[in-house]
Amino acid sequence: MSLKEELMKAIGAHGQWKMRLRTAINCGTLDIPISVVKAEDQCEFGKWLFTQHAADIVQDPRVQSVRQLHAEFHKIAGHVAELAVSGKGPEAESLMSDIGEFTVASGHLSEAIMAWKNGS
Image (cartoon, rainbow, N blue to C red; front, side, top):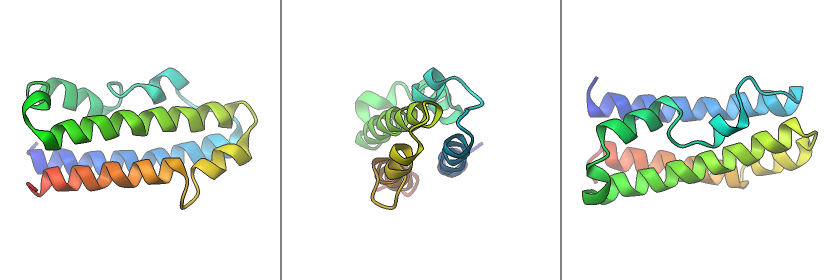
């Protein structure tokens, strides 16, 4: 798969986290351990990023930015998951609102991935 295809796949996969977390908020359960949600190297993109582009992280500021934003995304997603499964749905929902931390982090990550994809 080409770099552009991998990066577009990553944007889609991280968009699916929103649906998965909303389901967790509504049901109060999550289908994977919270530790996996929090881990930046456990999703498919994280595994790919750490194996295929480990050397680039030091040299390419776009890769550095994506890696940093990816880690932040998973940290916040993990927090949303923790709130969802502990019965704090309204708090989790606030993080996922249009101006919530999750939504902001997700947007920043998508923008950085697109910048990498487009070579800027």
